[in-house]
Image 1 (cartoon, rainbow, N blue to C red):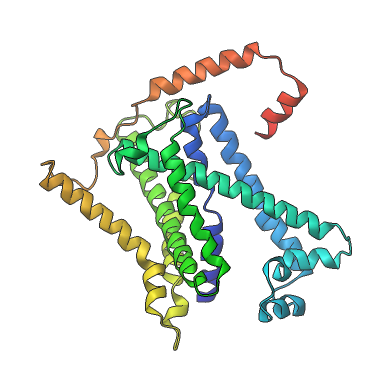
Image 2: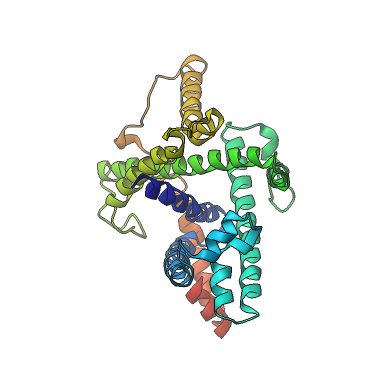
Length: 325
C-alpha cells in the first residue's frame, strides 16, 4: 500500500501546473472571464491525458510488459522505455511514434515556457513586497521584468546536470526538493483558501453575489488536498525507511522543503517582532481579512473588456477560440 502512495506522490507532483493559471490573472484583460475557462479546460485536459490516455496505454503496455521491463533493465535512453512509444509501435503505424515524440517535445517547451513565466512573475512580486532583492523590480519599456526573467533562465541551466552520470545525482536532489516543495505549495494554497473562506463568512460575503464564480466541493476539496499532500509527503520517503535504503542526502532533499518553509516563517515572524516591532500574530482575524483591495481595478477591467467584446465582430475563428479558451 505504501509503494502505491509513493506512486501517487509522483502523480501529485506531475499535476503541479494548474495553480500557475492564477498568476496569469495579473496580466489578463478580463480575468473574471478568462480564468474560469482556463481552470475548467485544464481539468478536462488532465482527465483526458492522464486518466484516459493512461488507461489506453496501460492496456497495450501494462506494468509487467516484457518489452517495458526489458528497456528499463537495460537502461534504454529516453523514449525507448516509454510505455507510450511501446504501445504506439505495437499499433504498427510507422509515423505514430514520431508524432508522439514531437508532441512530447512541444509539451516540454510549453512547460518550460509556463515555468519561466510563473517563476519570473513570482520573483518580481516577491521583490515588490520586500521578500527578494529590489533589483528584480526592474522592468523594460514593455513592462517585462527582464532581470527576474534573466535570473530564472540562468537558474534553468542546472538542467544540464543531467548530461553526466555523476552530476545527475545533484539534479535528482533538486527534483526531490522541488517535488516536496510542490506538496508544500498545494497545502499552502488549500490553507489560504480556508482562511479566505473564513473571512468571507465572518464578513457576510459568502452566500451572495460577491464571488463571480464558485468552486465545486468547497471546503471539502481543500481538506482533501491537505490530507492527500500530507500522506504523499510522508510516504515519499518510504524507500529510505526499508532495510538498506537509508541515505542521508536523499532524506534531506526529500523532506527539506517543509523545513525550509518553516524556517522562512520563523525568520519573517522574528523579523516583524524584533525589527518592525509588530505584535506576534500567526493568523489575521477573520473579520480583518482584506477581501476587497484591488476589486475596483478588476471590475473596471471586466467592464472595459465586456464593452470591447460587444464591439468586436464575432468571426468563426473567434467563436472557436472563445469556446476552447
